[in-house]
Image: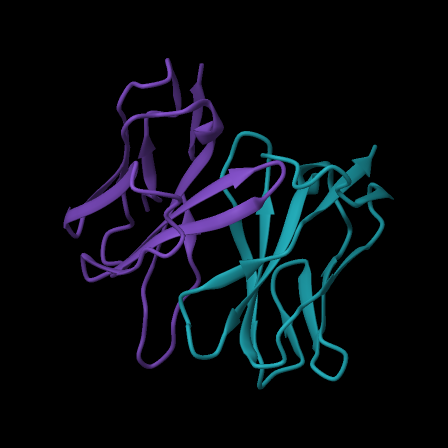
Length: 116
Length: 113
């Protein structure tokens, strides 16, 4: 079965440019998560969608970050304008939430973002 | 994957030995726990999970133990193989926010041939 698919795998761009990261969750999963991983802060939840609706965006750093989920099979995370401190690995994860029980989150292989 | 923090704990074991990776969790109200494995350049990979109504769960070559009294979680890997070399994260979720996983800082496992 296909796992969570993210693109691009690597992105290098200059500060001030718009960056768009893409995610295709596992088919049938109803929840989608965007995380950011850095050496200093570890894995941080940015935003959580359930049934395509943003439920919790309290982890989004600031207004430069936005995320959308137009349908059950696609989500984007956009940074505009980008800054060097946004450099990190961004992961998308999906899961099937209950009832009766929730299932574990499954992660994609991430997008390594470098802002020069 | 990324090293988390400046001082990632490292466990070095001989191939074929058993490994035990420990994790202290923070919230006594957490009711679901997961272990993830992260290899270099890849995302966290689900290994095994356990709910708070259990104290032990076994998978293929892995066992998770949960001690709620001292808020401690451990992952045991039997007959450790070179392919087990990775960073291992435990994660807990708070009962009232089932989606919100809180990740530990990670332990790097090195398997010596």
